[in-house]
Image 1 (cartoon, one colour):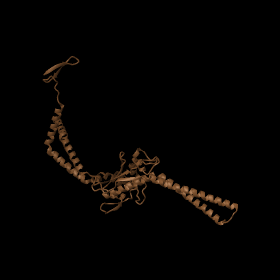
Image 2 (cartoon, rainbow, N blue to C red):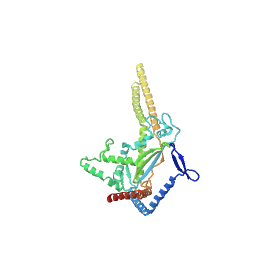
Image 3 (cartoon, rainbow, N blue to C red):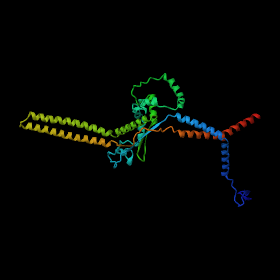
Image 4 (spheres, rainbow, N blue to C red):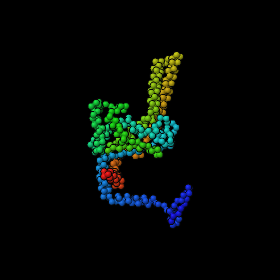
Length: 387
């Protein structure tokens, strides 16, 4: 039934109401359901074409999945040794503060754990890995890391096609390029192109991260050979520990060197004073002159003072050694480096499913939108030609 109402201007407006005197609302959900059903029917009519496209996507996915070389990842996890807390001046649990326990550092020279990824990815650190000897899982090759990266790392076949223009440009420039001396030590201040390429490859394959909640340090190394991956991961951990230890104990070791130098000088002075006193006693044995007694007492006092100084510097050396040990960080290996058995990439099932899904989406888009749009454009073109 219909009813009328007046708007603000006094004009009558007709309203369509149902039998229960409520306005009738056109449901958009029903229209959407109808549209979805129509789209589903269109796709169902073209199910053979969709199946063909999905099969083609599966074939392409398999080609891509089997073209990507296998990669093996080795993860090493380190954690600070549990302790009773941190002293203000540092303690044997200094590593706990280094990795963030207690929210502080043991000293002004402590390395923040947030710097570990930067240390691992730095040029000097990566260049230091160039000459590390590695061996493949079959035991056929024993080469360095640099040789492995330059000669043994494989890439998918399409990488060669995509990199062909750059190779051509490199060949054109090779005539003007200077010959590189492979026997020359690597200069971290000025790398050559091959050295820079190796550094970039290692930086992409070696990473470090720190969990701010658990303070666990994770070192990850990804290589195409499982034994090379495990060997390099163990080496990176040892080098990182050595770097942090050297940084943390730098001042203490300098203090130890200075204390040892003072102790050596005090020791020499003491031996000289002692020898002078002994020589004087040998030459003036039985002499009762007061001048001789005075000289003897003076030499004896000098020897005593030299001995006291030597004793003090020896104690300082022991204290400095204890300080070096105190500042040495302690690492607890939560998960050591082991040779991985299964590759971490490529994930072939995921690649296969992804390509099949992309093929399905592409085919559906063509059926629902691409083909009708193309037919409409052809129709308009034909109409214009007939006119």
